[in-house]
Image (cartoon, rainbow over all chains, first blue to last red):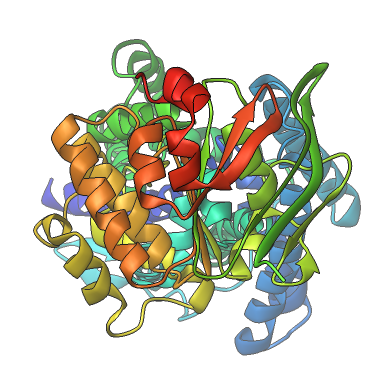
Length: 299
Length: 234
């Protein structure tokens, strides 16, 4: 009984960490550009896949494989940013949305050709011997996943709120014209938000793959989960994205344990439809939304 | 040579000409008022100088070099700060953060920057941790001016700093501009409130339908019948 419960909490911990990394990336790009980036999940897939080649099959040491993986995904994220975000020539929001969905399909399609259609994994960083805790078994990799999420999101939060460039990034998100008048190079700053989001996704892929495995097609579902978590928490709000991710992870983990693993996706989508219908600003979105409305009048 | 020189600047929005060949100059240490009715092209002129709009002819020179065609961020880095129309504060960010971003061109605020702005606008001192959007209109205008000053600019462009403010606040804003004048700052002041603007300015230009129709010493212009009638409500 208790063991089941603790085991479920462990599961929620690792799924929630992964969702949080994706959702924070989605919310970061959204707040800088008003673009919902449905290609965000592809960076998780790519992070996992590139690590499969370098670390899993290539035998590279972790300290070399991880930076190279991050570099490659960051470059791709920058490319995506250049394609999706063109200031001044921004068409309808829907066309940008289609661009990111198209990019998602292009990336996963390319991944199928670069690698293959199989499911891959590579060894966990600290072995597979489970840590026993209250009768439940904790995979050591869970600690890597949780640690990576806490560290990355914490660092991002510090960057956004306590560094000049982070504040400049938030300023670009609020009002591009005013940011430019402050001397902030808006284009490169917005591009940086794409790169940061890509890095978060990639890190998620690197730490989660030993547990969940990876194939070329997993990105879109993850992006939708990340989007849902960000919406639930309140789009554009980093803390909200984390909160939304935790809620979804707990719901899914407990549904899988106590109902059946087939209903867990169902629960996610029922929740997100309810959120979109009845709580469009999300849990933490109320205050944020007023802030946005205020700035819209300044445009 | 003047610090800022506009030569035959013309800007159109589609088929509608907003500026039709404007030439003017701002000398170092001067306060120049630009007055005119709604739609005369005052804000367009500010935007053309700041790099938000591009003149299709003529030239814009600042400190001896052309700045026509530079984007707004580059212009800002040359030491030209703007107090924009409608203030355009970062509403969801704190007052302190707004001020700090004003100093972005210099790589962030240094000791003394903040104190200087807070001496000019003591009301902002109590509001530092508050979100900019929660300030009153007058306080927001103070913040917009303070944010521009944080850049330690060589030239400040102010676009209608008194618009929409209660009379008390208008007085406070103009008192602050008067202090900046005493400090020898160079300011191009766009105003609908011609009476106050002419009182502070050394020189003034009158803009009508995208053209400069009158220019001269502010005191002389203010005494002219035509100006009295059209802009000073006499």
